[in-house]
Image 1 (cartoon, rainbow, N blue to C red):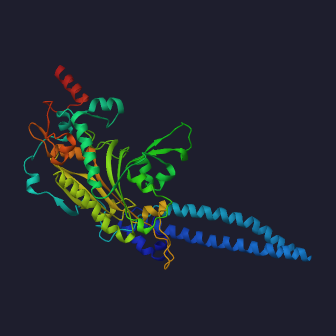
Image 2 (cartoon, rainbow, N blue to C red):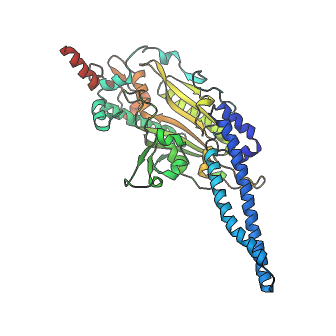
Image 3 (cartoon, rainbow, N blue to C red):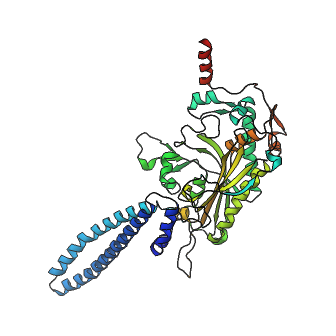
Length: 456
């Protein structure tokens, strides 16, 4: 959430940000939050005044009764207060709950450099790695779907048979390549003074609610139950990214400025429903339900977050440059940002087999939006008397299955796939992954259709 004092003191700034995010009903929601906030503050003042009156009158009641004075009128007033105070307390809770629900729907304040546009139709390129020596050679070729199959590295059919949609078995040389990418990714960040962390892959609902947007619960997250009749608040969620447990790691903690920054390299399996992706990337392992990812997380002082945003995306660029992969970095426009991000860059690699750019990295500066929900703060400023919150940033370094797909398409030859030089030490010095199957992949359905056509 944003700082509510900004909303109270400069509501037009918040409205402009929501307008530029193209949030449906965003400006109206800001007005409604302001109305509810005013109602809450007025009710709270009335409640505190009623409690003060009760305390004062209770003391007066005791003195008057002890002195034998008439307490009839005072007793009636105290009786009214006894009824009124619980009513006010209940109403304060109700209004606060409604205000906070709507308040949490307001997105982070946009960074001034974010391109203002409703969608990603126009490309806002920040940098690119498309030199001639990288892009020459393979102009047209196989996609990773066939390349994985040809090197004997995947079993799609049995994966679907066992798991269902988007299931697969990664095997042999492809499994070794995946492990090599993981090991190289973690070593890469360790050299840059990131602390490697393997995270819990289940999160309690209350922790996940502070990390994920509400629509993520339906679009991305898998629920896990211990008992079929467990209530909603007992559910746990499989993580969609190690970002979630890593930013929740320090929730409800006070951080000393001298202990910052904290640089974490998170490694985990990730689980996503891909509920909004029906029909997209059905074949292969680019868009799947379970994958491994190495994530960069930074906790830092507010004034340092722009610097670390640049460092995170630079790390990602250096990583993919070292793999020899062509890419561009693009600024995500205002209308395509998630609520937490003040600014976001994507690194999109060029897939030579399919001839298109595909997202490999998302890098976001979430400023203090997430840390306010998670109550990750620093000691109160002695001059301003305000409680500062740490800034949180996240960036993919490598979603290994996507990187693997791009490597296969980039380094394919007529004989097989060349192993990128930086990965060879992690694969026992192997330089080439040869083709062991001489034809491209056909699904079970495609083979059945061929048999039916041949019988006609």
